[in-house]
Image (cartoon, rainbow, N blue to C red; front, side, top):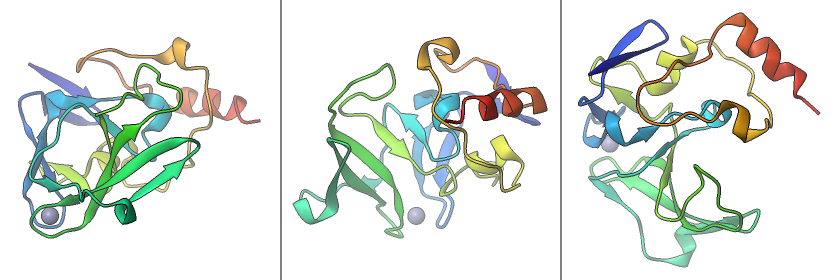
Amino acid sequence: MSFIIGNHLINVRGCILCCFCETRVSFIEHYLPNAQDLVYGGYFNKVFHVVVPNNVNYRRVVDGNTLANVYCINCRILLGWELIAVAQPSQYYVVGRFFMRLKQIMYLSGVTLHDSLFGGANEQAPNEQDGGAIDQVGGVNEQNHDEDGRASMKQWKM
Ligand SMILES: [Zn+2]
């Protein structure tokens, strides 16, 4: 099964790699694309070949949520965070899930998840949106990535 993100045909069974050392850290099927958070990172149900230090020095609390650093097991780059405690769970924000930095992980093609979505351009960050309207489920979906999509995001800026 495949789907298209940007101009890239993505095989759902494909791997996600650390973009520095090419260690496999997840599968695309574990990736939960969420248009609200694509610039910052993406949610994953499962990652592997990572280190999550069991030490409060590697955790932080943001808006009442506790995040633990997730490092590549090989090169030790910070890949993202595991959600340890969540103040206000949502469809995506769930304890045990991972929020990965899309610039630090890539497809087998060598294109980072971030660049596959944004073409490498330095796009502005989307702003807070009402989640329900754009929630997407599963690996097959259309990323709203055209000019209209960005324009509508701007409208939500408060
Ligand atoms: Zn690595």
